[in-house]
Amino acid sequence: MANICYNYKQVILVRDDLKLSKGKLSSQVAHASVEAVLKSDKEKLNCWKGEGAKKVVLSVKDEKELLKFNQLAKDEGFKTALIKDAGHTEIKPGTITALAIGPEEENKIDKLTGKLKIL
Image (cartoon, rainbow, N blue to C red; front, side, top):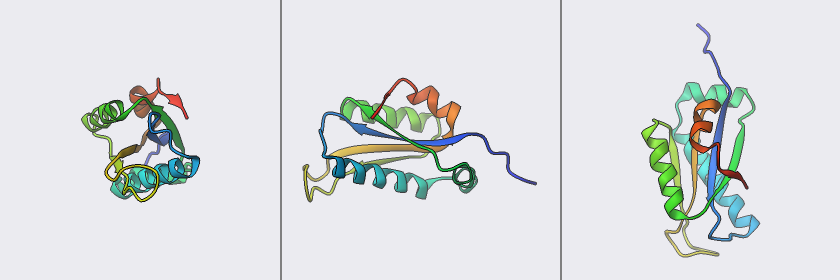
């Protein structure tokens, strides 16, 4: 029996307060996306990839807000990946920079993150 796929997407939240360079921000987003994919359910992952692997990068105010969304996403049963930087370049080691949520059904993920600003 074929899987029924819905509209899936992944969101990556990044901290606005860190004022990362474009290159650093891009690498943190990539780390988060890959880590979340590695944790994801195979069927959801296949649907997401088959639909074009939609990703949206959103901005949060600071670490406190990022951690709040991490907990809310976990409470909904979503796969998450919280990224802590190694500290080799712009920021201190262990700084929490980004959070990926999903891939998950778009309507479900939008209920959680739909009011955040696109980066």
